[in-house]
Image 1 (cartoon, one colour):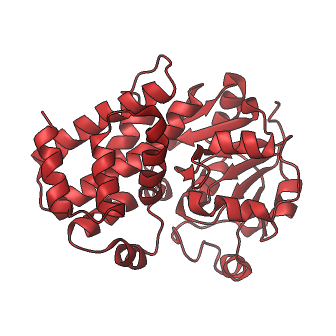
Image 2 (image 1 turned 180 degrees about the vertical axis):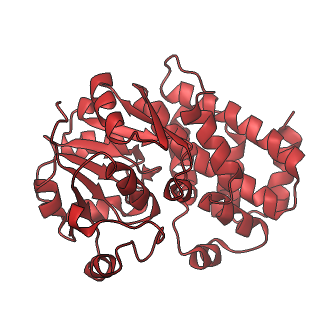
Image 3 (image 1 turned 30 degrees about the vertical axis):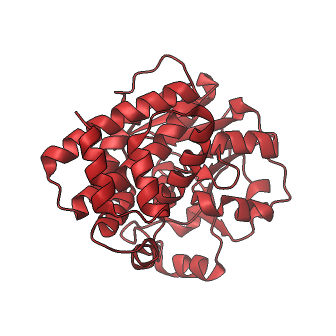
Length: 332
């Protein structure tokens, strides 16, 4: 696919969507932007920034075409960057009548489609007949908040077509974002999902007052577990120490910007799942991922003690104190 003069669209209105829009507008002249709520769009236009997320990032309204009509945005765009939370993706797409087969789909969703238990690339391929060479994933140790501050960040674009990955990577590279490419779409997507579960685990341990020494052991074991799981799901030659895997795991597990870590910390301090979700007012993808991965792993039967512990705490209401104590006894 030739990316020259292609129209790009952002599909979603959250913090990561806003950060990606900021990055893209350093390389494209205009941007289409699908946001579900008309009132949010009107407020965005009036203020010149997203009223709900990363409000310090100012945008030139003359360079953005907003719409709450998903079909209008899809029809008028060649490249669609999906940044909606995974639990809501199917509902957004239910309104879609336009064809996706000739579009280039970029997955910036760090989750799994619930009920389907499919990673995003598999879902677009199976449900919408999008060829795998026209589906990319963008991931890496890159918090939206740091993009807003233009702190140096690194992103990896994965696609079965390295040519297409390289083409899109050029659109998201600028003076504060460095990019690389990969053909390991499945590994990158699963890594993006798993690291959110592990970040919940680090948060739970933080809430239980475990210190940095233990957190380092937890993260070391999480990296080993991630590598083991991904290699069973998609056994190709990869280096788990690459930033798109290990780097993303570390920043999500340690950073105060990590909503999954924050969510886990609240659980460790005694909040119920529902009360933590209400207080956060943001989606912790790892909560949904824990259930999806647990169900997927019923087929593969990979040894995943950390994922199992998080699942037991979140879905089986087992005490975090008891579950983490069992986990600590299994570590070396």
